[in-house]
Length: 545
Image (cartoon, rainbow, N blue to C red; front, side, top):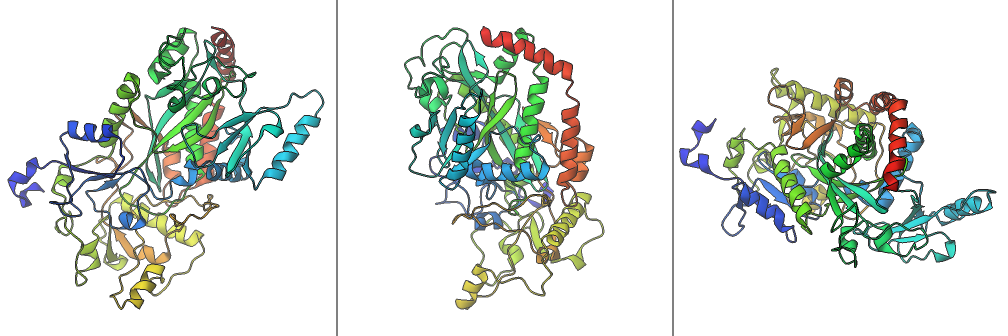
């Protein structure tokens, strides 16, 4: 394949492109790997391999993606990273598949819309004889790093001036030497259709820097574990018995600590993996997109009965380095992400592998649409499909057709008129066929619905039957060369979905969400009661140490 190129090009490095405010460690890691940074003054618009930014990309960026490029965000990933969106999706899934399966998140009230419902629940508890009133936590729906959080017990203390989410506060957290903790789990989704999920084996255990105390609800250093808050506390740099200096451990140290006290953490991590899968199932399908990925930060709290709870899902989890533990975990995390993106030597040429068109600035109006955006899709009619298509590509095409059928849309003779096409007509510009694009990852979950909200920056859509008239010519980057299945492990990234053959089959030809739920229930049933009882006995001793 390299014979078609100048031999001097073999040494060409991969190129990264960074948007403003991207953490410096991203640049450092990519330079450590021998990459070079994109310079828009001297390089063509498409002469890069990885574009990393903190904010979402425009859909036009996703539509014009080239086979050698990757974007670090999936469109509409905010569906689970905004607290109110996540609450609505989990509530819908709980109604569809049972509260027992989705009991890992406390019941949420979105204020001010749910104010009357919250008052009813609050009053019901207060009037119950022999029942102690709950503690509640109030969080702004679109803020992070612990900003604006309020913990209260009496409703007269509830004050807010923006949209907030109110949930029952987990008042019995697992404590180590009296300090509250939670887990920052890194999750990388390489595809939402079909759903392909990796969790990172290493992660961060984040501690509050003052001992847990329900009698002082306004003490953020005792109740919140955010490093952005605790690093300003008086006890942050002090040595804390059982914890040490600072406020972080690695997962490795946490696992070792649990095992010292005889706690078998295998069941715990299996439960956490189930939480991740069930949460991501709640937001599929997302808009079709090629060659992108999403790194999420799942915040998990463990209570004193060793039950994991989902607190929230973070968009752009912090990659800043506040301590040596951050450097240890996050630097290797970024190295492993690059490995997960599975670049080939051919990608260094930044040239279309089918048509041989080099990376360059936008084509003129006279050039074909295929040459303009030679991404994972090329505008070739199905009638021209070769019989030698790869099985993965055939499965993806079948999935797209099935989704189109499920949406109840009928085929059209011509692409539907979008806002973009209408504007083009008004400007008397040549009309370009519909830009609906996807890759072999396009296998939607028929049981999941759209986001309950519409955002000015987000568009919620599914592929139309017109989309089925186009042929996938490049398989997804995350599939193994040997068997065209997701690679089971890369570095410390471990594949958790699909987790068995049945789940893999259920994610083909239009994902069967009911079958996936059935497989998850089988996993849960395998957790032996004796193991759970032994774990609970050990935890009681652990919290007293």
